[in-house]
Image 1 (tube, rainbow, N blue to C red):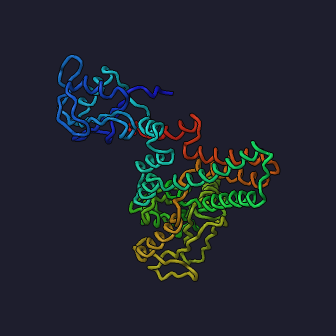
Image 2 (image 1 turned 90 degrees about the vertical axis):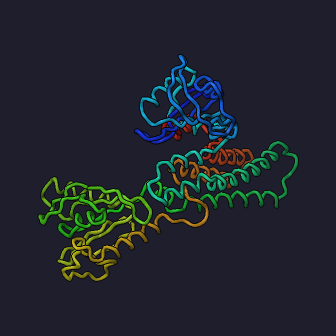
Image 3 (image 1 turned 180 degrees about the vertical axis):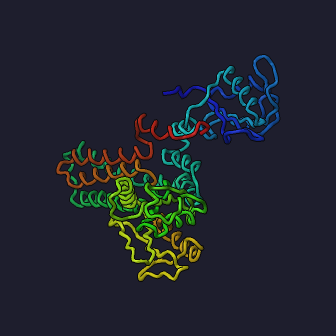
Length: 433
């Protein structure tokens, strides 16, 4: 683990050459480091043009310098931002001068980790920063911003406050057993425990909408050989993803294409034609096709109307039945859409229908949804502990169960945690965050 008293620095702008590069410095020695390289510190929170020099006095760059004393900074520490000319030689020379002045390069996520440790954000908000940086679509951006604004944390904070109050009441009963607890009071306690548990259960029963949006959805295109699956994925992706051939069994493995549908990142899967075959390689492709379709969020079952029957995976997923080759007059009773992937006929309507299905899978009303498996695991444990509290026959056992419930929620928000949890969260960040 790194020393939290160190002064750290990192490039906070994008990688590669650019007109301007932003270099961020944070730590209790940030002011002294700034004095070493620019000689004259700007007024707090006012950008000023300064000449940056190394320890020998050689000029490194003419840069815009911003001095931001803590605690009102991103990390809660004294901070400096240097707006440098974007050449790699400039970055390297200024970085070398910062090291000579007593700073060190930051590790991945170290700025956000310090913000968390200094109370500038909770763990949920820190994870939202990482999600915001990685967002590929407007829907992901909006979800990350909602979590960053504390909407999810406020829900968990309310549960924590209520459970802590219940725990205090239970502890008082344990400490003063001679004071009999009125039956009405105990009934009210049990009712409140049950209410919190029901709220957590409802929060968990969200169809994984937040996790789906954060990770992106998977749509599998399935069907018999030669119904036009490869042509359809090429049309949806807007590029050549799969080889199109009149020869049956051309697609042997699962091909993937990343697209945005309805503002949500989606991975399209082109799968092998579903049929019985004696060809070992093709049979393996069919097995993989069934396996990937079984785990997909949505299955597009493609028909060609020529007597081929699509065997849709019986996995409980939503299946969208699409008839292809509509330009040839092909029709299929009960189809959700009719298209010609080759000519584009009906493709606009299909894309709109897919956007509606995607929206249905990720949209959620009420509190912001869970976004990570870590959150889900912690809340499942908390709900289980509350179930134990409801069934506990001894006050001591009920108190311990309530304590466990609070602790599990605390690990989700970071209010109660271990170094292993923090390492796992912040390791995913880029260096400048």
